[in-house]
Length: 142
Ligand SMILES: [Zn+2]
Image (cartoon, rainbow, N blue to C red; front, side, top):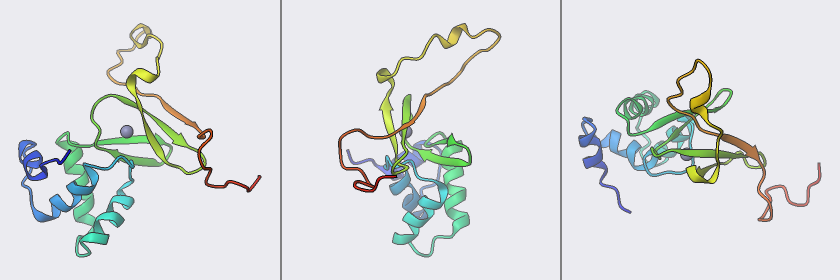
C-alpha cells in the first residue's frame, strides 16, 4: 500500500504543505499509536526545522478533519491512531506497546441495552502481556 498523502490531505480539505506532508507521512501510516511528543520526535528526526507548534497544530487539524483519531487509552496517555475502522486495543504491560486487535476478535455484551444511555462508540482496551515470544525483560525475575 502506498498512500497518496497530498491527495488524502486535499480530499480532507487540507492544504498539503511540505510541513503537513512530513507529519502525514509518519502519523497516517504508523501502527505505533504514538503520543504527540513521539510524533514530534519522529518527524523532527527527518525535518529538524519543524516546530513543536506546527506538529501539534497539524495533529489537531488531522483529528478535526477525520484523518486521525485521538485516543485516551490510559489516564494521561493520549495517542494518535490513523486506523479509522473499528478495532480494539491491547497494551503490553512489559513494553508499553499498543497493539490493534480486530473488532471481531472480542465480543462485547449488548451495549444497546444499557438503560438510559445511547452508546455511539465504544472499544475495549485490554492490558496484559504477550505469551511465548521474546520477553523484553527475559531472565530478570521480579
Ligand atoms: Zn489502533
